[in-house]
Image 1 (tube, helix red, strand yellow):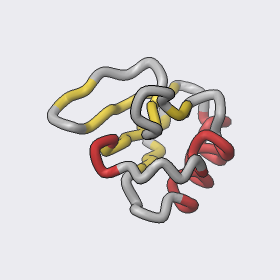
Image 2: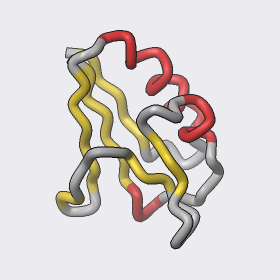
Image 3: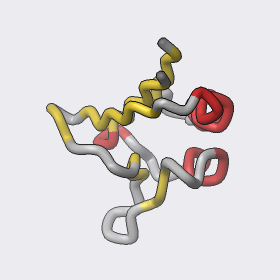
Image 4: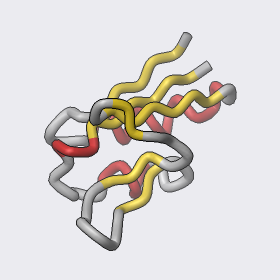
Amino acid sequence: MIIVTLQREKCIGCNYCAEFAPEYFRMSKKDGKSVLLRTENKKGFYTLKIPNHGAFESCDKAAKACPVKIISVKEI
């Protein structure tokens, strides 16, 4: 299981996450910030649980590329 968390309010809209993991991240046309797909906002944190361990590599690249370090990826 992979758990990906995004602190969307702190996003600066650099687009790295959408480039490295387009199946999980998109850039909002409204405000230019990142959107972690298929999640809900819980106190500013958007969390996605992915049963596929193959998603770890692309999501981890997105997290490492983020200049403001607002993406976390855990493998459990």
